[in-house]
Length: 571
Ligand code: DGT
Ligand code: CA
Ligand code: CA
Ligand code: ZN
Image 1: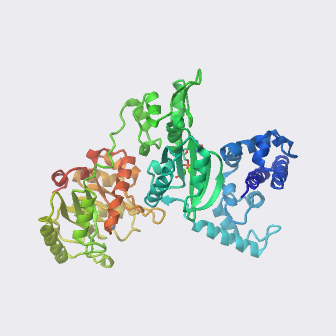
Image 2 (image 1 turned 60 degrees about the horizontal axis):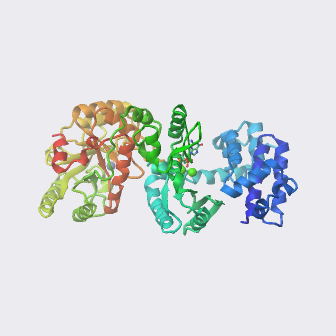
Image 3 (image 1 turned 120 degrees about the horizontal axis):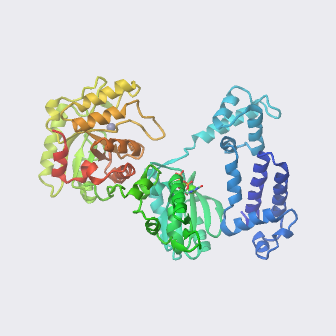
């Protein structure tokens, strides 16, 4: 796309948005300017550089300023503002293929439609075909377009995204003009799902970096490209925003683009009160604009009088207040987990033998793994009955003789049955080191029923932890109804742990509930629920949830060595 067309597109969008706002005068002005620039023979960049933008018929001061900003930054702040100023629902309508701003506004004006769901309902009820200019066919087209729109997942699982980030970081770090590269935004905060990636680079040569970025192998579409910014689509629909900044304000840009927005707003307000101004370019004294921090993120928090606030905490959930009081948690570190407390083997629905699991775990530097296969009521998973479990126990004991500084723990993921009883008898549970008790059926029960089931399981003397305590699957299945407050109270009393299940689509408990459990004095266990040895890598995801839940290493059972762990398991 030539730069002229790119600029024209921006102006067309202005025109459309102004018409959406009912400002016909501005709308026409932008549309005319857009047409002129689209058919201009000279390169718009050259025209701009020679200061002759306003000589183009239809381009006034305001439009010239828009063009200048876009050419120099690849971005358009007026356009962002304008987009923001419209009712959000109406703007969403435009994301449905075939619906332009005018149509969206008509839907809003004539049928009071303010969201895609409302549009879908109106089309289902046959209300669209009665509008002037529409018919049965266009109504059906709208329904089809909505279906297509809805089938695109809007957010990505963190676990899916982390390898992509590593790929991008490696690719960009290999380029000579790149001094530092890091993904900021929600992925740096390790949020369980990620909307888009925000890659930040320190370099003195933005243009070269942007060129290298847009030529990344997996880029399928370049949405915008400036001298210091660019947005591309990777694969089908993962947007990656790039910003190139100078090394002198890399820290402040990293701080700004890491977010969260709420964290930043609060931090900025606080800086103002202290006589500073904080933005993506640095921390400045207000009276003379002198920069006092910004090269590193740490320098900013330090200059404000805080200890460093880890990205995982930056959600405005009390971390700024805690930093002011000096009561920030000493977060559990990514290298502090010594073992995995929930792994499946070939004995049930896993792919690997006990030996293969042990080998992979040792390669990863773990000191122990609890083998927790399914129990008999999960027939499809080839769950173990008492007899097979006894055989597995014997096998594990035999294998353990050969390991050095490593141990397989004898465990099970035992089903919590509908009546709250466990799927296996105490007669065999008593011989195990670690018992995960989980719900895998009857998800539709009432909160009372589900809570009773779990609480009843926690009263069994051999249950060590409750597996994936809410049963949710991210973006696929809601948690079952359960009163976690009651569960945590009982857990604390009964000395039963709560699991952070580290599979990318589970992360269950989530960050919020993990924190609530910890505050009630509940010990947390982290388990990957790995069904293949490769999935042991998800331990880090479990730790990220623990960190987002404000946990310190002492709150997590598997930060302890094998003896320490076994001491903490209820017996
Ligand atoms: P996402 O992409 O939906 O998973 O979430 P984020 O947090 O990555 O959000 P994104 O990509 O829109 O923006 C990245 C960061 O940039 C965000 O965490 C904070 C910063 N940021 C973006 N827009 C604003 C804004 O309007 N005000 C402030 N203070 N910060 C913003
Ligand atoms: Ca983002
Ligand atoms: Ca973004
Ligand atoms: Zn399970």
